[in-house]
Amino acid sequence: AKVTVFDPRTLLLVHDLTLPHAVRWRTRSNHRESNKCLTCAGYACFSSFMPLTSVVPFVQRSFDELGRSLSEVTFCIVDLETTGGNRQEDLITEIGAVKVRGGEVLGTFQTLVNPGRAIPPMITVLTGLSDALVAKAPRIETVLPALLEFMGNTDAGGTVIVGHNVGFDVAFIRAALERSGRPRLEGTIIDTVALARRLVRDEVPNCKLGTLASRLRLAHQPSHRALDDAWATTDLLH
Image (cartoon, rainbow, N blue to C red; front, side):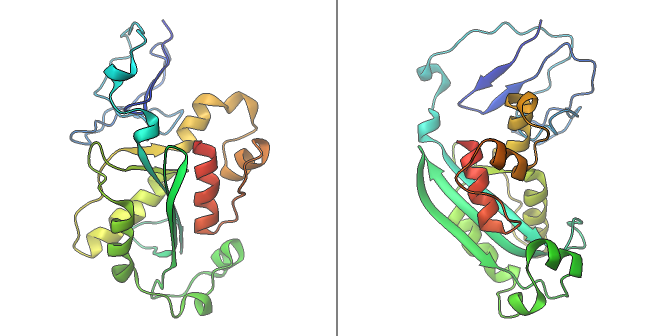
């Protein structure tokens, strides 16, 4: 009764339907949440709700049936640095993004952001970002249009947003968009933490980006700077 399916068109992970834990599936159409999978954070689960008692027979489908192949999908891998972990109170200090399709890098995006408030000392120690370093950087209201243009269309069939613990990054971007009076960021969102937990969890001590980059010998190593971490996540995705 254990069914694990990876659908390269929708990047859908169908979990073990016999596990006795609560599962929440987020639907792509209306973003309504039911029971979220506590083992993978659920960000890579895009499907209508499926009861735990269901048994889904797996039938391998052809690429024609799946639609777009992975080589045709555009991914935008994003990473943020912030003044803290509360998306309502803390603010973005740096944005890094890498855009790829078919293994080819289409472009990169990197900018410091002046949060308009002091960066806590512990954040400066962690990231190296200081008040002096971001003093002349643009405010987030100025950065958002350029970031959205770089991402491109994220609607169904468009750019897929990717990140490591991507819920954190998307939440901060959405909060900044809301404060700026801009539409909410929507689209297909893939969390490489969830993918790592499903695919390599038994091979690594944890699924932190630094651990995965080291154990898998990725070309780029994370440094708690946005673009470095986006590059490392890009390597991890591939």
